Image 1: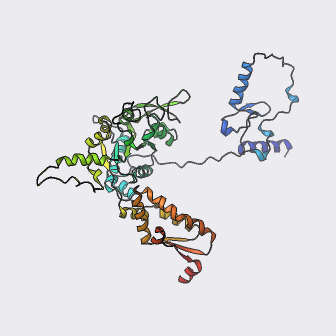
Image 2: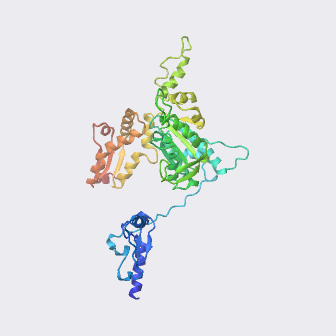
Image 3: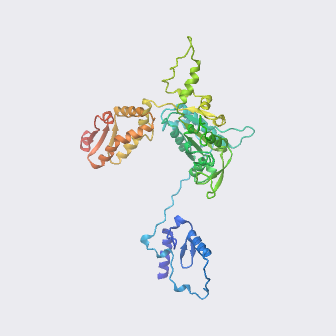
Length: 460
């Protein structure tokens, strides 16, 4: 084989395996985009080429030279080839995307199957799981048939109300994962009226488009979850313009109902530098969630209107200790809270989530497929250590979580705190075979029980 053929093969391998670089700025092709190939294997990025043209056009003293007799062959110019191999960057291997089955009438799970799947991940909230399963099933039947005939089925957008840490976001995340549809989760606190600092209402669709890999058709069948929806309630007793309250509700009306919306691609607001695309929202399912703090006082005031003197009168403090008073919420209560009637009218499915009690907290620690304690057991099993929790430990963790009054999200913080020393010390000692967490250790009055590998071998 001749020397020329060997050099050609090596050059081809380099082109396939290593990235090309701009001759001027030395940035790789993956960063600047397709490079412009010039003679003598010189590669220049579009930015450097444009800057060069701008320099020529802006130069007032430029003198044109006669280059007709100029011999370029005397210069030994090379492009990216003059960079040593030790400084070249290999191209990233493209990950092969698994072909995801498309959702159709045959593959969409029935409500009872959907609820059974939710039961594996979400503890309690049976009513909420039943409502969301039926609403999602009906919505995707409407989307997938696309044959309305003379009867047009309206969207079943949802409003879920529940105390903090009761599982609103987790419920939506789980249902989207089970259905394998794009999901966008956004926070209503960042939304403002168009033209003000903050995100426009169209930004919720931008996030959905990003979740669908900028596939408009896929995004138009997705789910949008708007959290903290209670934060855009109408402001009371204010003289300033309500740009983050009622104005946002007004802006969301057309999106919730279904319309053609111009959406900025990859940005939160429209400007001259951002490309726009059009998304039809008629088949996008919107789920709004919020804790609605202090709405219990509005519910109590409405219920206590029946209180009067007489044998059938209700006590004024009858509802003070009712933890699930939210179950009795009505449209009138939400309007009193500050939600406008037009907005509520576009959220026909309204349901509440229960506050978590101590028993539910213990179940959350033990039962879900991806329970946090199971995650730690898996981590320690990689070090060949058996992690166990006795019943008193579950009780102690649940008690601490109830004191924080932040629902299930308090569990993670508590577990991270007491597992820190264990996760730090165990890799130091190869002789440890089992660690048992007790309630005394959680409360700070004792230590975990440690069994050595030799003892465990004798027991077996």
